[in-house]
Image (cartoon, rainbow, N blue to C red; front, side, top):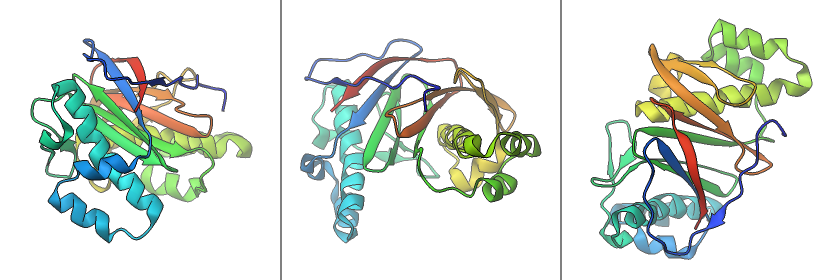
Length: 231
């Protein structure tokens, strides 16, 4: 797991933020009971139906945390941020920057940008059936590359493809079940990978949010991560 630099998160202390042109801000949303306060009535009802404590915490961090972050950029209290969703469920807020979110193993990470963005994060140690999933969802060329690496590296190679593909589908807003088969990824040794989605060029940046995670950002235009904040 030393292929990409592990990020150093900076605690956010309430300062006003503006996303640079062609820039991305990444956020690590720490678990907190405060996010329950920011849920709307429909979200709160769903939250109360979740029985597993970890899943409840992840849900409130995702929904309430996004409202707080959008409110930071809009200079508006989280309770006044109206969350809407596109046809296949991708969230957005009128007047806020573009954003996307992913969570795994109790960690929730969001990306905010001036342009459309997609992000996916996965646990490096998760159990995967790489051979089966690759043959089902990946192109023959991608599957061949996965099968050609040593067994010890196969899972990580598969996960690199997977986070790139999920980030691309989330960028598109089409939803994982509608879009996964339309993704093509060209992995690069330095993590500045690329690919296409339904024939449209996609720029990818693979990164390591923590030493046990792998992640990727997807965008239609080249972007640079300009801030790594923890809240």
